[in-house]
Amino acid sequence: ASHGQIVFFLDSDDALRPTAVETVLANWRPGVSHYQFPLEVIDEAGQVIGLHPFSQSAEEGDVHWKLIVAGYYRFMPTSGNAFAREALEKILPMPAAEWRLCADTYLVTMSTAFGPVVNIAEPLGLYRIHDRNNWYTERADSAHLRTIWRQHMQMWRSAVGFIDFASDGKNGAATGRD
Image (cartoon, rainbow, N blue to C red; front, side, top):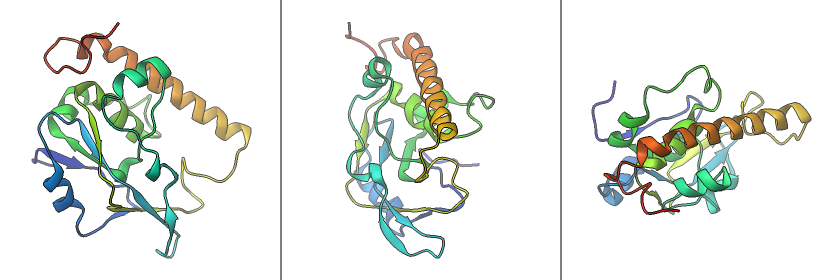
């Protein structure tokens, strides 16, 4: 179990750069729901082959309302995030049945109800690509696309459920919007 005020989740096949924790700590400020940072993509042998596609387009700021209105915002996968314990305490435990796959989507999106997202430009982690990735794939078959859309709909339903919970006026994330 973790005890700190900043929580990293790391997929078992990914890695963090040695400077990841100190870089996040140097940038941390109160009230942020989570920080996200680029991930370098590595192959099964551990060789860097490029950047994760979302590394240059991950969105930051008050993205919770974009999530509510548009149903989505661009974010980094599990290993490219550091969360405020305060935000996690408000969204955990996670509804496990709905989020067996892509649990990072729940953490990344629901935490936005409790503060802005801040991007760090420096790649701080390594995202491994292999033939058993549940999400990242080069294929565009209909079964995989249906899975993506089911996850998007689940994300939106969960985010809408946080509107009343997050709009108590204490955190500023869901107030003053029409």
